[in-house]
Length: 368
Image (cartoon, rainbow, N blue to C red; front, side, top):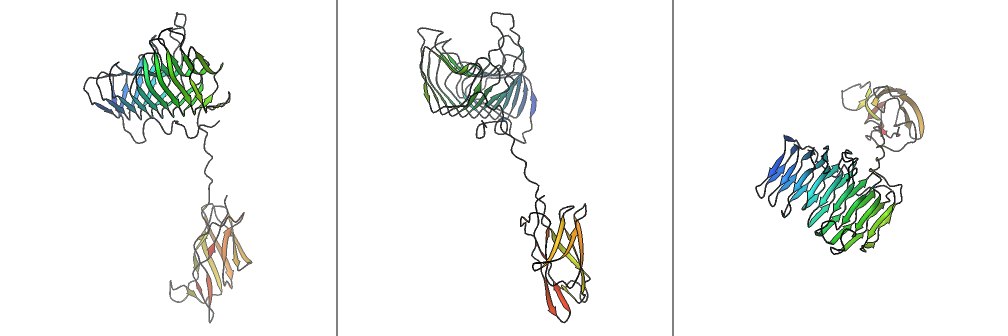
C-alpha cells in the first residue's frame, strides 16, 4: 500500500534553503520566545508559555530532544527534524510534553511524541524508530517503541493526518494507557499508522479507578503489527472506516517514475548558398544544403509533401546537414514513432524565375 498523500520526508522537517546556526542545550524561560533555524546538539527545555520552535534540527543525546514542562501552554513545534542518539535508561524520545506539533520529521527514537496534556499532533512523520538497548537485563527491559504515546492524566488530544511507522515488532504506532491517570477525548483520525506488536493500543488495565473514555480511531490506514491491529483492554474505543492493509504495508513513499527524456524536435536552422542579397531568404541556386540540429544520433528525414527526398543522421553533438537539388517544400523529423514534437515552421516556396525563398522547414521528431 502506497502512502502517497500522507506525510513523508518530502513534506516534513526542515524546509529547503534553511541555514542552521549551531547551538547546545537550550532552556527557555522567557514567554513568547521563538527558536528558529538552530542546529541544536542537546535538549530544548521549555519552561515558559507561548514558545515556538521552528525550522530547526534537534539531535539529543539525553532522554528527550524537546521537553515541555507540565502546565506550560501555547508551545508550538513545527517544521523541524528531531532525532535522539542518546543512551539514557529513561529512554530516547523525540518530544515530551503538550502543545501543537506540526510537520516534524522524527526518527531514530524510542518514542516519537509522548503527549502529556491537551495537544494537536498533525502532519508529522515518525519513522525509523531505533534506540540503544541500554536497559537490557534490567526490570525495564529493552526499548518499548511507540510512535505517539499517552500514559494517562491526559484529555483533549487530536492526532490527525500523521505518518507513524514502527518498523519494530513490539509495542505500537499509537499507545494509549491509564498508567498515570484517566484518559478522555482522544481523536485519532486520518493517519497512516503501521507496525509494532499491535498497531493500536488502548489499554485501561493499569488502574481500576482512572478510566479511559472517549477514544476514537477513525479514517486511518492501518498496517498490521506483528500480533494484529488492536489491543484494547477495559475500554471500548470507537472504530470507524479504518482501512486494514495487512502485513505488506509500505515503510516509505514510492519512488516516482523517471521523467522520460524527450529530445528536442529537429530544426532546420539555415541553408546555403545564399545568393544575391544576404539574408533576404532568396537564392537562385538549384542545389541547396540544409543545416540544423536534432537529438544526437537520431535520423532525420526530409520530405517534399509526402515524398521522402533525403535523409541525414545527427552527429554526437546534435548537428546535421542535408544536400538536395530542386527542393520545393520540406518537412523533417527524427526517425522513430513520430510523436509529433512540432518545431519551428519553415517552408521552401518556389518564387519563379529560378529563385527560391526559404523560410526553413516544418520539423517533427520522435521520443528516444
